[in-house]
Amino acid sequence: MTTDTSLAIIGGTGLTRLPGLEITHREVVHTPYGDPSGPVTHGVLHGREVMFLARHGYGHTIPPHRVNYRANIWALKHLKVGRVLAVAAVGAIHEALTPGSLAFPDQIIDYTWSRKHTFFEDDLAHVTHVDLTHPYDEELRRRMMAAAEAGQIPYQGAGTYGATQGPRLETAAEIRRLRRDGCDMVGMTGMPEAALAREAGLRYAACAVSVNWAAGLQGDEVTMEEIEGNLSVGMERVKTLLGALIPAL
Ligand code: HPA
Image 1 (tube, protein in one colour):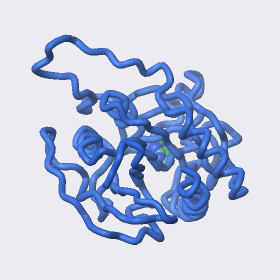
Image 2 (cartoon, rainbow, N blue to C red):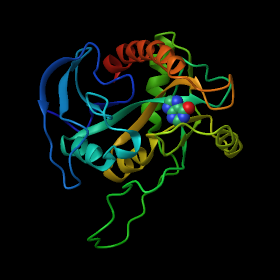
Image 3 (tube, rainbow, N blue to C red):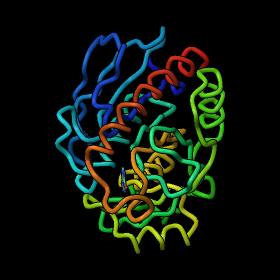
């Protein structure tokens, strides 16, 4: 039986399945907002029930701007999830975010556009504004930091995530602008996911996996080889992190 302390993991690029998850069943959820990225996988990981959803689909076929973020979050809420841990690949802007390392951002700037970004759209009894001063759940962030310490994983315990539209990567000038704005990392999926989780009353935090230096910061171009190499190092670390985090939750 699930309770509102149940944990769901949303896996991003490089995490289309959860290593070590003993799968019990998969559940197809239809939502008022259309279909989620795939069935929700139920299973046991490190002795605890967890749910898993691959943000880009299990075959990694859904690009960031086409993810049905509302359906994904609605489905998890419907399944009585309380906490959501979102794993997402990012480009590093801050020099401490060496590719392969992890970061647990504490702020977001949203540069995305024309995504379905709210549940409070139609048929409103009254206009609703959720507070998003602190977009990530502090307790979950702290627990991830403790797990990273326990697993001796290099991490940054804070940082601002700049959410861009994608699917293309940024220009060097766009990254300079993001840096001026105070962004430490850049990714394509952080919003509206975090805001929708807040609207749905889910406790949400992100584990960002640095997979490349953002455009123009090092080297001439961002290459897929670079991203893929760092992604596998980073995902090994995510696995270690979950091994320390989940039993402690
Ligand atoms: N930009 C945007 N999203 C990303 C990047 C990047 O450099 N790397 C991984 N996701």
